[in-house]
Length: 280
Length: 314
Image (cartoon, rainbow over all chains, first blue to last red; front, side, top):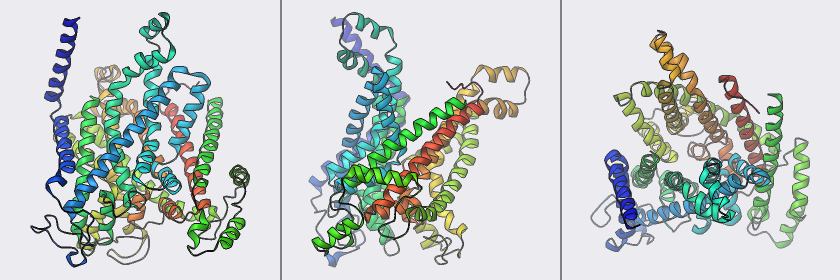
């Protein structure tokens, strides 16, 4: 027993080392994400400038020692807003991914396992949800439920679950035919236990890579929504919202558009690169 | 085959019904309704009159039933904000989106498929590396940011191309639709082409390693014939499904790109209808897009079989 666990740990550590060696890109992406998260969440402790304090006399300043990245049209410090906005984007991205996975895996696994009428009804709902373009569905939902951060998280999660359900459904369809499932059933395992202990854990590899890619997609969606003015509302900072401000000043101060865009781009790039290398 | 199509269309109609019900309930659960938006100073009696005018005092299910009834008669209602029939509004905006979407889709296929094929043949060579780099960037860049940067470079600095609109002269490059299309189509292609490339490359790699490719080579077929007749044809079904997927996204109008470039398309129409709580337009756009998406999916599934005789419908 002891030996078996040790062997298991060794195998896993070996797998990690091999992954690092064969996927330097994935490793770089993981390190990049850690840097972005640490910077955004610990940065404000060091850099104590308010992201919301306005100062009309200091509007649209170029970078200086007082404002390392300059100020926006309302005289707010851009670096401080970048950090605060990053917290919003990263939290929304991760939490809405969790929402999508919980609903998607549950629906997909149940539809794939129980088949019959349940499958028919659930998969039709998945199809219906997939037939509405994401942004349009989000717009409708935001009109109805408002745009506080928790609602945004829920709404983006609700847009992403059908894709997750499709993946889980496909996998469960093949897993349920395997011999050990039959063996567990023959041993008197209850259906719920079978799903929980024997089937859903098998989905982990594909869920992990899907999850990473979904965070990237969620961050893009949130920023797009805030850019349209339907997402995170001012004075709360968000990367998409900062770009919305930048668009109206594109002829006056084009540099406003640079930093929030770069941050979104880098974050999404890292999540995509990590997700792709995990998929392999 | 006929049975398959009939069944798919039947399922599609069912999907559309479920979708319309979900969206109708969602929209009508919104607090306030159009009366809240029309005029903030409106008195309670004015609001009540407005609600009566639009029939909003009836129960939701009754409203859904009457909406459905008129949709079946080809009537999507009248827009609150534009005071025009919704079918006419959508008819005005939809061709513009189709123009943009068609151009971007065509370019994505014309660039993505040959590029994916070449990358699969010369894996790890410079073309593959370059294309993979561009792909990763295209998949990660926010399209509206790219749009702003494009406006900045080509309109503000170089004065080469118009920044927004569809016809009006101004900015640079004069009037006409074509100069106005270049930037939005360019941005959309940059963002959507990578999806085609990734799938084309992956399925070409698989096809080039397959037995039938070895057989074709063994028969002495020219390399060109092996790649384009044998491998590409076998690799095309996954490419077809990603093309279908992109079409469904583009047909909804890339709301963001249309908004940034002030392109009068269906996506922008939806953004405006949402901010004005124009329920009939919101419902109409959703149902038209949903129906198009379902049609595209059915067409793609039928095309699978036409392109690849191994596919069987049951």
